[in-house]
Every structure is written in C-alpha cells, then in structure tokens.
Length: 90
Image (tube, rainbow, N blue to C red; front, top):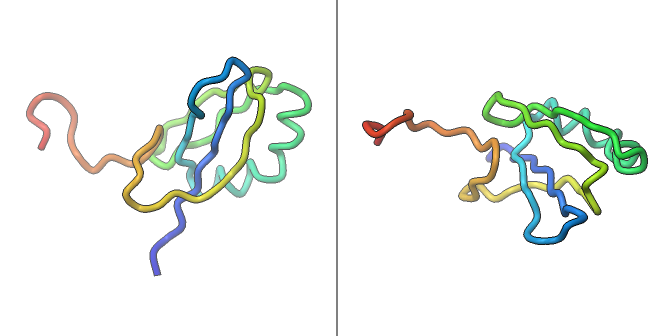
C-alpha cells in the first residue's frame, strides 16, 4: 500500500487558482485540529512541507482552506524533489 500524501489547499480572498502545499506527516496531523482556529483568527502559521522546508501562511488572506490527499503523480509546493539542482541536474 502506498503512503498517503497530505496537502493543504488554500483559496485566497483575492481569488484565482488555489495554492496547494504538500505537507509532512507531522504538519498534517498538527494542522488539522488547528485549521479552524487559524481561519477564524486570521493567524499566521509555518507548517513543515514534505520536502523539509516550511512556508509562512497568513490565514488573514485565506477565504477557505482544507486538508486533503494528493495522487502520487501530482507536484505542488513542497513536493520532495529527488533530482539535483542547477543546469547539470537530470
């Protein structure tokens, strides 16, 4: 069985396409119960992404947010990259 890939979907107040972040397992578990409070208060949070980086999110600019899972082939912000960096990367 494949592992579940957790994602945070943000629909900004300004409109446009949603922002999607691939979350670490720990961040998904932590953010789930806190998401309603962050949305209600317009707080700022920095969840850990699946690639080990983090993103600062100001929920005061978010109209709606939810957690979901991603299919294996989808790449979004924070998706781990097994490739190297720079021009010589394959």
